[in-house]
Amino acid sequence: MTVLVDVADGVATVTLHRPEVRNAFGAGMGEALADAYRRCDEDDSIRVVVLTGTPPAFCAGADMTSGGETFAKRDESTFSAAATPMPAWRVRKPVIAAVNGHAIGVGFTITLQCDIRIFAADAKYGIVQVRRGVMGDGYSHWTLPRLVGMSSAADILLTGRMFDGHEARQLGLCSRVLPNDEVLPAALEIARDIAANTAPLSVAFSKELLWDTWSKNAEEVEAAETAYHHRLMAHPDAREGVMAFLERRTPQWQGLTSDWSERPG
Image 1 (tube, rainbow, N blue to C red):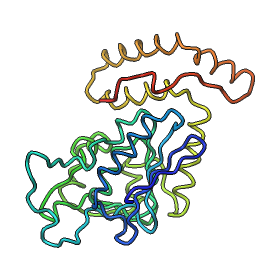
Image 2 (cartoon, rainbow, N blue to C red):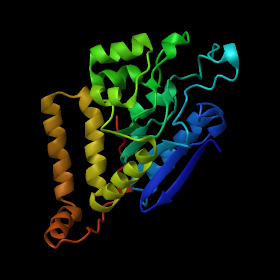
Image 3 (spheres, helix red, strand yellow):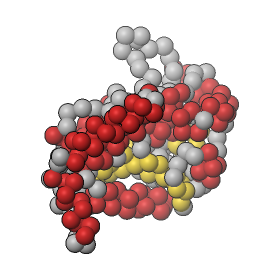
């Protein structure tokens, strides 16, 4: 199996698993990742997803074992540069990228589809495809400029250069930089906190609007926030959240993500 899924305490750990090739993206990994995301999206017992890789890398990029045929012409009716048919932003739960080692090419661009990113300090990162005769994939020309701005996105995409976790943090690509072996534990700590203390529907609506905001103006965002507030304030979880805080206890949420049929963007 190229992608492993382990569920505990409301958190699904999705692991890219081809350690013999540093988790290079191949052998159906894109479809397997989409299947894992769909499972996490549909299962109400899963509140948060953590995406990581089997050490020593997160994902070394495209599988180049086929040599010069790695980027050979594909069937135009079926090929997509999306990397996976279900990107992380379509999962109605937070997806945290625990990038515990090198993330190159598509191995890096799939992290940009996640909601929160924690990077290993000494690992190497880059969208290197222009140095391989192709170009950045995985929606990177959409996600990257919105994360770091046009100038930094051009620097990363047009040079194909690599950089470490500290520079990634300076650019705004991740929220934390940690030693390699601390990345996954930190991501799981955040995930467990979200799973225990946040309302499933509140998080789902907020995530949907965060990603959709990029196509909205201020007035449209206000209208969406207002509409979502009406839906949430009419739900028992709005009372439960306040009472749990006042009574200093863990909230017992009733809302289920599966009750909401819409999908982000």
